Length: 456
Image (cartoon, rainbow, N blue to C red):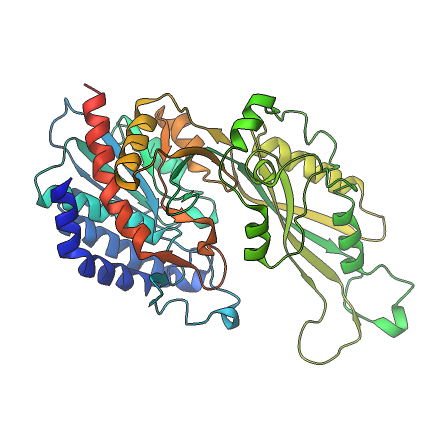
């Protein structure tokens, strides 16, 4: 343990400087104008792995953005840990809400402020630096393989094919992922469940062109109005989703499971204060922790149409659009929920407009075991570095590749994240604590040690 702390203390300034260099690369996978930036970030990850001591490092092309692979095989008789992370980031919009430019990282009050600082560059880079630490101190106890992708924020559409084609190269014992959060810096936790996702875009078309709202208003359907009415019909007065069949496969938690989940430290008053809301809003009959971790949701992520420029333009628009995400829980599936939504939306479309539903991406929900060697190894590692045993929690977000890894590789994952829910991921002023970054580097080598010893 002392060699870990000493190496971190001696190199922490360099670790941070290197992370800041990577955060300056605007690797926005959703925006084609950043294609070269995404490629540049892949090369950065490749060079970082090589410098840390990895072998056979390469930037693997896909029909989309590349995957960076690297490994260190010290003894085939030893366990192999596969590290997954991603170097692509969300778009930084709206730019005017950032206190500093999103790709010009700054440190404020112990926080690294930049797009991708927590999700997932900062957390992914902890693994590279932890690997470097183990290599430089001759303390790597087992084999390791790195698989760092550039399309997580757009659904990992090419990862499945790449994994299928590289099954032999990806033989291992466990997938280690840091793309989740802990309850607080003094309350460690490990996610043992993630919701799935169905993400769709809806297009509603009325007249064949934009019309004068005075000449045609009141006589022709307004697609924006119709779309809003259709979306409003997807929930009832109890915020229960009204799509027929939506809840058919939902596995309800037992009373004991609900009680265990709600034992996690949580202050509703602090939650509301942090968000500057007077009251929470969600499905009747469930707590906030249950709503965000164990219940399916229907959320409108964006809606637009007509004239939104400066000043006024009295237009009745031809089209309206919305982006919608539905978070799923076991045993719901992406394909079924997408089909149910599409049929429902088509069924409630008035004849005055036409509707088109385009699925974007999705992923299946997962629950990871708490009695596995990997979970126990992670729990012991965090207990050592935090001084407290971590609490098992369920995350509200989605990491679609967790189910993919199990399907294609037959491997479970351990979700040992170090972010905080307050890190503003996907929002302006995203940040990641220096404490969390360094704590991850300190904890990860202990996971390797524990997992290797427990696997004997």
